[in-house]
Image (tube, rainbow, N blue to C red; front, side):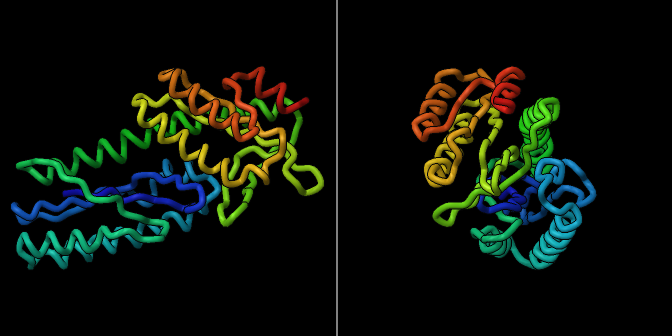
Length: 254
């Protein structure tokens, strides 16, 4: 059994990064974990609005919590370790959460823990970071050439708060919004998953959005899925265009 350790600094956006893995194999009397180094910069780079020092403190403290958990399990048999593991991975409302536990067959739980960590934490996050941040960084550079002022701003409605990376404000109200969205995931389920999250958010805050709200879509791996998500966004009265330098520049300056 294993559960992913997730860093979710902004509950309202539902975005998270896998930062560790907790694994338990009752039949082999095994329980252990792996977690990112608090000094690593990849996660703070992705959640750049979150205080880096606070992030490092949270990871350090949770690492100690996991150490205490493993220590408690040292003198327990396999059944005891199972109960300890299952009790720990219950849902929680905090910056660090645990995924629902999953099961994988392995005769070497220590090596399997390392494999899971590489797959879910290092490789998965590196790919996500490069895709998401590349688009946002490119848009930031494009906007800079226009001379227009766009800043990060959170918009709230019906108890839901959504952060947008590029908001142009006039008279202290959002006038234009640019939201780059990467939909080039390899699996079609991941395209739908990411798109559906944003469709749901927009449905709930649509009345607080300015008429000039642009979703710039990057990616063309699963065109039918992207077209479906685009139409659902458009039905909420937002503008949807393919991501391009010309589209971003024109929208920013017009």
